[in-house]
Length: 347
Ligand SMILES: *[C@@H]1O[C@H](CO)[C@@H](O)[C@H](O)[C@H]1NC(C)=O
Ligand SMILES: *[C@@H]1O[C@H](CO)[C@@H](O)[C@H](O)[C@H]1NC(C)=O
Ligand SMILES: *[C@@H]1O[C@H](CO)[C@@H](O)[C@H](O)[C@H]1NC(C)=O
Ligand SMILES: *[C@@H]1O[C@H](CO)[C@@H](O)[C@H](O)[C@H]1NC(C)=O
Ligand SMILES: *[C@@H]1O[C@H](CO)[C@@H](O)[C@H](O)[C@H]1NC(C)=O
Image (tube, rainbow, N blue to C red; front, top):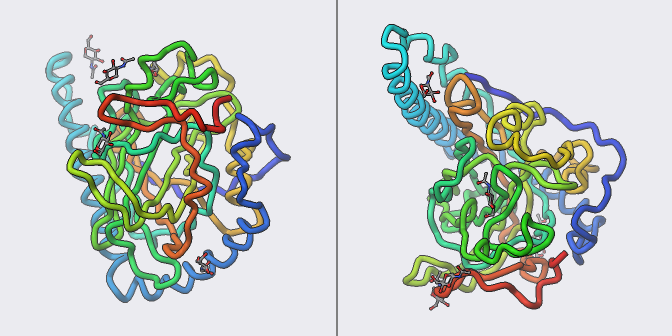
């Protein structure tokens, strides 16, 4: 098992503005920078408070238990394969030798996710559910996110964490667009893979079972997030109302991406890979700040194909509203996905 601390990306020049200037929206770079500086300071000040309240300790224990439980599941599945294929193979060597207590002993990095760009592919009113794989192929990815209020240093309970990302070959579900795979594929509007919403618990934590995203033209591998506060749940398990307190994008270490992209079906994607160092959103979310919008991760088995456990702590300003920045490509309804005719993201 392998634990990797984030590397600081050296940014080389501004990347071409992938899918359009729309992503830059009305939220100015100057105000982002000032948010980054303030919020990072707030999170640093929060560290002692979180430690005293036992919140960091519980986060470490939870993440270790989660990794352990899922590692066993991954190992079991492989043991079965081994028994079927080679009956004399010892299963001992599949146990990773590094104990979790060591892996997770480091302080959780209080990572500030700055306000980022919503991008052109958000689908509104997705289902509240933890397993968002919908049977798509790819490398299993467990996400564990913890949300901390940067004004009070307290975990944000009952926050709804909305995530979306593309599939192994770089296409988002729920969106019909020439910028998103086959623009004539109307059936994609009804698909919901790699999209979902989860509510945070008393420690400000929520988790997803998803798939490691692939890549598409002009962007580094990323996962989008929106944090909804004060939203209400409808009987059909979707959200209504509330405020969007945070919009951002999360990233992965380049060497991890390289390993995943070497596996099938990721390696069927012939679109050139854009590296973190060349991605304009990585740049905006990290420049002039200590912000680190990268998932920390551990492998759940010996190779990435056994699964990846990724976690991140996000500072959120729950007094803020970013509703006007949250343009959407479509809405999931009882009649399936419906394109948003007002979408400015149709490029
Ligand atoms: C077991 O055999 C199947 C079918 O040939 C193969 O797909 C799978 O990768 C094998 N598993 C192992 C652990 O070798
Ligand atoms: C990704 O999604 C698109 C659109 O739904 C689909 O055509 C494609 O087959 C998917 N990729 C994989 C690897 O399943
Ligand atoms: C949080 O957002 C509110 C409303 O926009 C703002 O007044 C306040 O300064 C922000 N707090 C921090 C720490 O950025
Ligand atoms: C859920 O219910 C709302 C309110 O009735 C409705 O507008 C929406 O289309 C429904 N969504 C789904 C996915 O069924
Ligand atoms: C999408 O799903 C709805 C409701 O299940 C169905 O009526 C509609 O025909 C589907 N659309 C496509 C393009 O498959």
